[in-house]
Image 1 (cartoon, chains in turn orange, blue):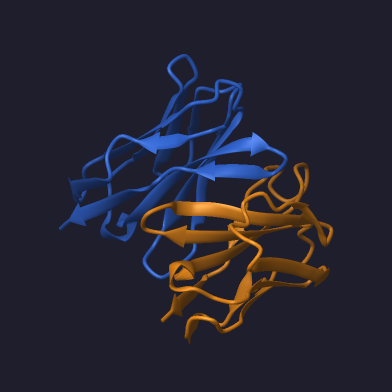
Image 2 (cartoon, each protein chain N blue to C red; image 1 turned 135 degrees about the vertical axis):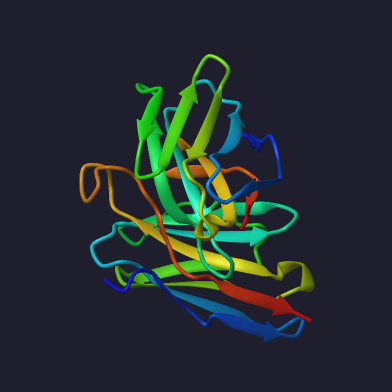
Length: 118
Length: 111
C-alpha cells in the first residue's frame, strides 16, 4: 500500500488567497483525520470523518476553514481566505475501526503539506 | 478536557545507551495510549501502544510503561541508535476516535 497521500507537499500563497489541500487515505480505512502542526500549538486535530461523514469539526479554527470528503478515497481541506497565521504543516491521517487490521485505532499519517501564507 | 504534557522538550543520549521519554496525562478515564515517532519532514509514525488494562508492553527495542495511579507513561528505547533521532509524541485516545497529542520530545543521539 502507498500509505496516505497528500498534495501538494509544499504550498506558498499570499494572504487572502484560497488554498486547497488534498488527501487520499489508505484504501479500506473508514476514518480520516485532518491535523495542523505548529511550533506553538503542536499537533491539533481539526476535523475527522467516518465513512465520508464529518463527525467532529470542533477543532476547525474558523469559518475560513472547511473540509469535505466526497468519497472514500478523497478529502480536501480548504482555507478561504488564507492568513499568515494559517502557516503550518497540515497532516491527513486515516485509520480503520478497532477490530480490523492491527485491532487498534492506529492512525496512519501522510507526509504533510507545508503551507506558507505570506 | 484532556491535556498531555512531557517532562522534557529535548533529550540527548549516547549511541548505545537506553533512552527514556516521559509523558503525563490528566484524564484518569483515558484508556488507550500511543507513542509516535516523527522524523524531520515526515508525518508521525506509530511506534507502540498500550491499553489501560496493562502496565507494560514491549516491542522491538521499545517498551511502554503505564502508571495509571500517577497518570504517567514512558517510552523506553533500548540501545539507542542514530536512526532513533526524532521527535517522540505520546498521544491519549479520548474516545470517539479523537486523540490528544503531547508537545513532543526531541531525541538527539550522539555518536
